[in-house]
Length: 384
Image (cartoon, rainbow, N blue to C red):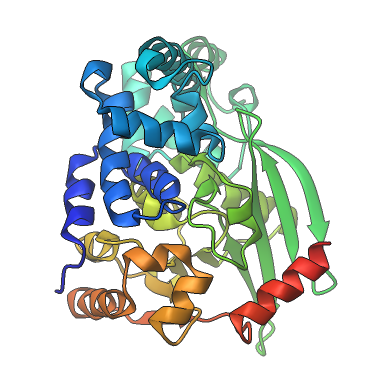
């Protein structure tokens, strides 16, 4: 496999989570020297979030973070903008404390997304028989209970014990729905931290009279890649979704349509490859707990260096869909800013490697825009 941009690959190994990489990717896209800035931002964010040691952060790194803080809310969280770079340490410490408090709330203890064996183990840990875990599994995945208080099939003591120890089902409030003339329903979910995320249910009537229901799920709140035609990217990037926040989107679609979801596509808000850990965890739950066939699941990506090869190592039976949107590198860079760091030849080579490793086909997604300049002009006129 051809490896492009060694600095990007090294940065991926330096970062301890894809969340760090997605932030760095977002910060660096607007910089003139993207490759160097991605590497530098990855190191900086790792130091700020994973191992805070502000005395070792280069002055130039802090300057870069200051420069991006106005455009990126997450960068602003890491800095006290009233202070200069030389006195940033105190601002970073305060912001880091707030970020940790919010992150602690998001991490929580959620039943949704856990496997049958994990729920059985939990039942034993709280002093119950193993079969209680199977009951909880059925309640959240089959009966689609939204709250532990609704678990009337299990003892009251167990319900109270789970609630008192901080466990939640992990379901969000349906904030708004819109139904199209063809029956498609777009759902806006309000998460625990009041962030909003979209999911879409797409029904299809087949010739044999059987309904196919596809859930188009989001993997991030917002998106850092900012493709020219995508409204999500224009709203900026907030955070990655947790596994239960991905799984619940499918349950919501099933409830709205009163029909089992047969297909799942990771084509909603966000770039799945920048939240691969949560996507893989949700994938397992969708397949094993909701009984959706692996070949009925599609993971879509616009292309992030090194991640397709990483996905290939899991040898999943899902379909990989790659959003090209352009027949050549020059046009693709105009439509997809991140393409500057991931040449088309390298992306196609990674797709070939994925096919050779998994034996699964790679689909190509292509949005017909005409000339990019004309499209952007039309979009500007429309928005005005």
